[in-house]
Amino acid sequence: MVKIVLNKMKKITIAIDGFSSTGKSTLAKQIANDLGYVYVDTGAMYRAVTFYAMQNNWVSETHLDKESLVEDLHNINLRFQFNSELGFAEMFLNDRNVEQEIRTLEVSQNVSKIAEISEVRAKLVEQQQEMGKDKGVVMDGRDIGTVVFPDAELKIFMTASAKTRAERRFQELLEKGQRVTFEDVLENVEQRDFIDTNREDSPLVQAQDAIVIDNSSLSKEEQFNLVLQLVKDKINSVS
Image (cartoon, rainbow, N blue to C red; front, top):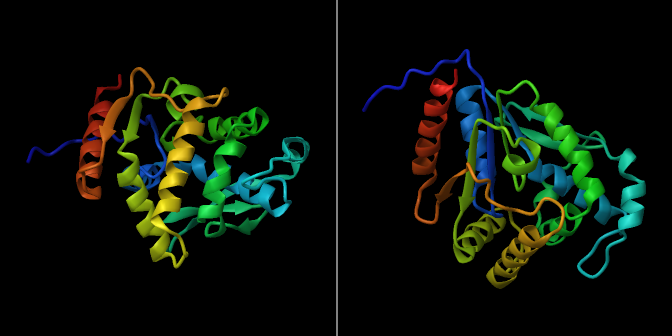
């Protein structure tokens, strides 16, 4: 194996986009930890706003009170706080740790509706750009390489079949003790794909200069090694 010498003086922005349940967050955490970069889970931010809307009965499977949510956006404070025991930053909503609450299927069923709202996206994109202004950041989401950081030095676009992604998500939810059916998870994955790719504001699209990775048959270790090589090549090529 050829040893890669990394120029740690140079920092870049790494944008990881892709469909739901492709393992973007897991990969981004691994890369950030390896490089000593800041990791930002933008999906958690949208999930936290969704959870807030659900608490206020502004969104459900059959209902969306967009006006009330938009009027109250100024009362939503989001921040990440690093948990040394877990090895990653958890999401706090108005100073309350909501990391577990935002990962439920119920939140997943509503998050794409909230992410469609232009005012919500504008608020969160502004915060995300501020978090990554000094580079040395790994950010994952749906529009990082196209909207948040269109000039990111490295852009990754992750994909896999809907069935493969649903199977992964189903097992993850079962391990967390949630009562779900595979059919419901698959339906949710397909619905989110449709909404994410068809919304008017910042739809999920592959950036022209993104590197596509279909991880349907890749292990987490294989995926990590592949992307880490891409990252190191890019860092060493930056002038």
